[in-house]
Image 1 (tube, rainbow, N blue to C red):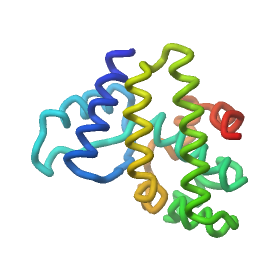
Image 2: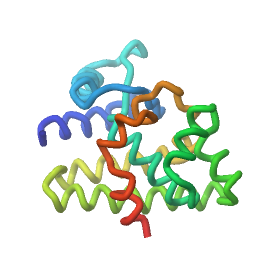
Image 3: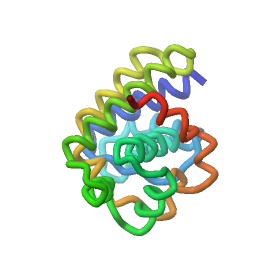
Length: 168
């Protein structure tokens, strides 16, 4: 598990350097790890980066907490083509406040993962640095409505209450 997460973190860093974009699409953890490992060896645009489903779903959960909406409301809006920024504005949350709220929440999630031994501290730092440097792109991103992070199945990866209770 830690090797898989390490490969994912390495893939995140490689994707930032290679593509400079956040492209959430639906895959399983195994597929994400495989693709992330491949992306560290790719230098062409044919190689695609896919953030792991748990991270994409966690961003949705943190966005919901920051906008004071239910996770299901945010997921529904994302499925209908709205970005997290548009959802936030409709909920009366300025984009800068949305960015800061998501980052605070994600920091808490990653810290808890490190404390539980699910993630190495360096891996968590790399993931957070990725989120921090790409947060504006992330909140402006138009999600694929069929993204696995927006399905009910994805709710088992990161329980909505898990990120919400730590987002203070």
